[in-house]
Length: 271
Ligand SMILES: NC(=O)c1ccc[n+]([C@@H]2O[C@H](COP(=O)([O-])OP(=O)(O)OC[C@H]3O[C@@H](n4cnc5c(N)ncnc54)[C@H](O)[C@@H]3O)[C@@H](O)[C@H]2O)c1
Image (tube, rainbow, N blue to C red):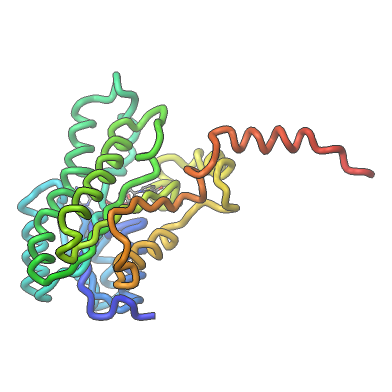
């Protein structure tokens, strides 16, 4: 399938996990991809593996000059930007472990998280939108999380940033929809990436117990949804917050306990 033939797509956070898998999927569907990341070696390796239709680029999405210059370079090289996939986020172990409760999260962690996960997305949008307006079309995909939908015991800054990304998405969809720009958010549940395995591998069995699907997600699952949102096939979809979380946000909080309870009620099998 070549749904993305001739499209120019920029992906942030392309150096690992979901970003890398998305670049791979976009290229497989015919796109040329500007793969941008703070972790430059990651995108260089990816380009080495996937070939000339991947342009590896260093970026710090929280730095407006850095983001602007990557978009400028994309326009100079290709003359258009069809899709911006705002996917990068602060996922490193140290920040995640210090991102605790509302009363205790250090302001420095809060501010840095919002600067990257939220302001970084606004910066990308505000420099992509004029280009997309000029060409009369564009699709912006913002990476949120199902952490945007419900309270958690920790990760106050991360979850708040992701909820705000959903609000940003709906505002952009409303403001620019009639001018041909669509904007949607993806809300993954747990996705098993290298980072996930480094930060909190012990959580995998617990999360799996609460999912409605037999397995937790992998980056390629999210990449498939991103490819759909990038393609013209999704032209009637905008302003949406799309969960892809194994049904974690679809059921009552007591689901897994209730399953155990029902299993306890089952009559003993005849021997
Ligand atoms: N993996 C999950 O379980 C999960 C669940 C929900 C949402 N998400 C979201 O998916 C996205 C991708 O996460 P992932 O799991 O693939 O993690 P990852 O750690 O593999 O990827 C994140 C990438 O962002 C890059 N990055 C960090 N700060 C940056 C900056 N300032 N500028 C540019 N790049 C920067 C990192 O170098 C890294 O390559 C994130 O937005 C994350 O919040 C992930």
